[in-house]
Length: 123
Image (cartoon, rainbow, N blue to C red; front, side, top):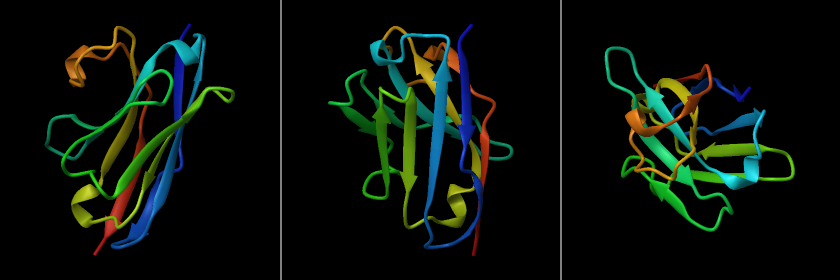
C-alpha cells in the first residue's frame, strides 16, 4: 500500500525558510514523478512544484519560481521542497503527491496524496 508522509511544516516569519520532506513507501519510488501542491483556507488545491523520476526535470508554478526548490533522494525514497523567502501568502497545507502516469501537474491527475503539512508564514 502506497503511503506518503510529509514532515517539516511549521511557523516561520516572512522572509524565512523551511524544508518539507515527503517519505514514500509501498512503491518503487525511483520509477515515478513526484510533486508538491498546497491548499490555503477557502481555496482550491494548487500545484507548487514537480520532479521527474530521475530528478533530471523539475517544474514550478510561477509563484514558486526562484524561491522554492524541489529535489529527491531515490535512495531514501524521499522528495523535498526547500522554501526560501517565504511570504504570508505561502501559508497553506502542503501536500506531497504521486504522479503515477506522468500526467500534467493538475491536482485531479495525481494518484496518491499525503495527509499534508501545515506551513504558516507570519508577517
